[in-house]
Image (tube, rainbow, N blue to C red; front, side):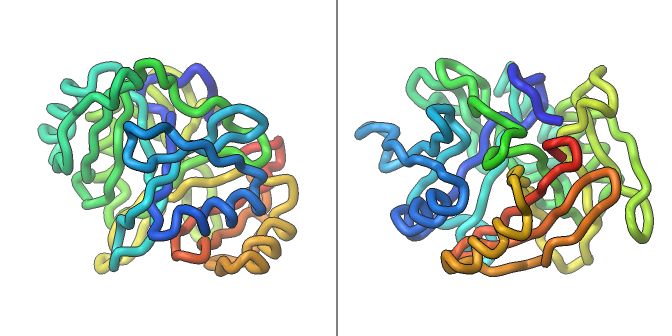
Length: 259
């Protein structure tokens, strides 16, 4: 489970790249109750999403991901951006853009892991990351879709020190990861095997009060359903959807209030 303050290697930020910032803001505002606030004139139109006065993520005008589709990006906490960049390259990953300061807010970097999935890191300055996690309408879990689960797990262990564990899953086992020394109760994400031709990506999960109602709302607001709601014993009721511009995310009503 995610927790604040964030441990090194934990997801501490998510943001959305979209060709229609205004439309996306209307969608997520209606779906999750998020409020948009501009980051200010010095940040190129970047905006922040708030839930009950606490930051839950960001949004920028533009596109990322396959075929120029809108997409969500997941950021992981680092205490030393330069050291993490070196560790990424040593573990077989690739740097997309090097560590750079975002004013006095923190230091940002972008990479792909050794299986090709993009991810980012955030070294906190004045911005410590999300102000709420696990509550309804906030981030509660992350999931990597990868062509090689063992290689990905080894990569993130080398970069962030993640320790893996597994649990039974329909059709096999589900590999999960926790920050170093925290144990399975501190799991922050999981790994899902994809086909060899698939592009790897990180998927954010948002906790909701009612998965079926959230899916219905997403469809009514112009989104699409990728996976209909399904119950996972011991986990909760999950579904996957996209916003009107194709950015994919997951929804979960956890059995204990979170993933």
